[in-house]
Length: 153
Image: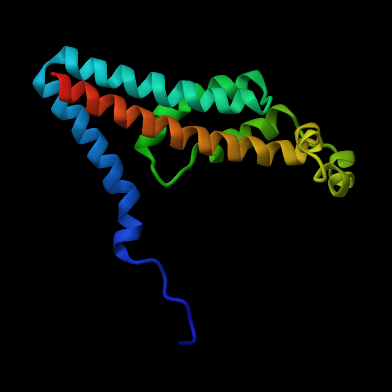
């Protein structure tokens, strides 16, 4: 075999199918009653937004990045091929622009976690990872919460 095969059709479609499935759950909830649908929507927003924002805050992201994490995480469902980190990292870079000295001190900064958080270049990477992991956990918690809402009504 000369070349690694590309991703299959199912692996390309999976993120979109997952998003469609979650939206279908919302539709099902609203068909069962507006209160159930609103409870599900509330659960999605609170769980995914709050947990993503907590993870961004835990790595000392800029306050506007933390706020954006809360807002963007629930909306990320509509574009499943974009991670929360892909939204938060450029925002962090815009709000805390790396300077030449940050690039020059990369080899020392990566030696400690504190260095990762102080260096603006590595901080962008840390915010990316934290927001992405936070969104994954937040969405998982939200799906469990939504399943409980559906199971009890």
